[in-house]
Amino acid sequence: MVTLSRIYTRTGDHGSTRLADGSTTTKTGPRVEAYGSVDAANTTIGLALALDDQILPERVHRVLRLIQNELFDVGSDLASPLVSRPRFEPVRMEQRSIDRLEAWCDEFGGPLPTLHSFILPGGNPVGAQLHVARTAVRSAERAAWRAVEAYGTEVVDSVETDDSGQGGVDELAITYLNRLSDLLFILARVANRADDPGEGNGDEVLWIPAGHRDEE
Image (cartoon, rainbow, N blue to C red; front, top):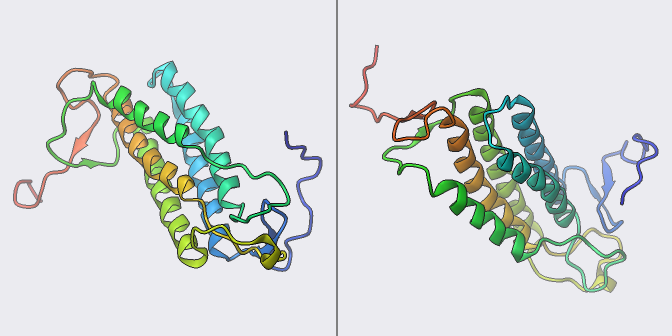
């Protein structure tokens, strides 16, 4: 477990920070941007849960709480360069977590009616916030791929890195973000259809293409 006895440390006052393996990098680096974006995405899920007033099933609550914990794992993974002999045992995402996201997509998405148009972000407050969450996760995914462009995905010899913050990025962490965004889209639909589980639209608002909508 992590012990946080003091929140401010003064160690990052000059634009540098330490990664999970203890190596130093700049606060503007793509790796820091990636795990910072994951942290931001996590807060959007927290807000969705805070807004919920018996709209989401309890099972969805448990799923989202687990996902919030796993997003900390994703952030730690992205903050840990792929090196051959790490100083500390890194937290790495596992395929089973991705498989579980896909299973949840099938579980929660299966009962939903087939969409015949795109959905406009909105609906009730919980559904709208889950749409915010899915876009935040997509942003984190893009940031992680920018880190891949900078550092690659290969394991680097830790003798050569010597506290440089170099080393590849774990692609499984990025795959997790990709699947999570899909799940959050589905859960936004679940939230917006809570009062209408049948064939109606509930609180979902469908996109009407140009030429087919009334424009004042």
